Image (cartoon, rainbow, N blue to C red; front, side, top):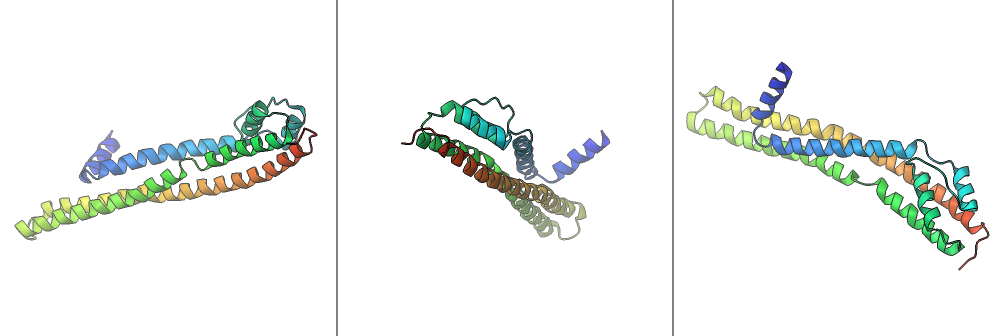
Amino acid sequence: MELLAKSIEYFLKGGWVMFPIAVCSIFMWAFIIERMHAVRELRHGDTSIEDALAAIRSGVFTGTGGGFRTRIMRGFIEERSGISGIDRRVLKHRAMLERSALDKRLSVITMLAAVAPLLGLLGTVIGMIETFNVIAVFGTGNAKAMANGISVALITTETGLLVAIPGLFLASTLRRASSQLKTQLEQDLAIFDRAIKNSGTREV
């Protein structure tokens, strides 16, 4: 309880700028957690290449899970026509949907992480203006009033940086993971496309 009380007191000392910083932090971490869960799901328990190729040949897919191979194959089997040219376009469309999903919310996470220190800087400016106003009215004799403005300046800057640093680091990590998954997706797509082309179905 004491720690909570001190945290609330610290938060309130930062002034109204702390509220938009807190909102940025909440949304940023919610999106980061969602993306980390999505990446973990895409990487683990996915359908093997051999099972996916068998599904292309047989037209039957029984794979489960949330990996992108599984999702591509599930959608492809549902939409396939049995005509090679059309099926290859269907496969590319399914892969395109998965590729766009890999970057979902990454730009928003980066934007929120970048906005937080700017809001902190705004708090710094507000705190310094408040300090200078006190000096203009009372001179340097009212240390308590001056300390309030300086607190606003320092607390908002510190909080903005505390939100931004891990946010930018994790956004970079998630973007790197997305890039690796895209590379794997392109490799799998080439294998699947060749399998469809050689599957013996009619061309158009």
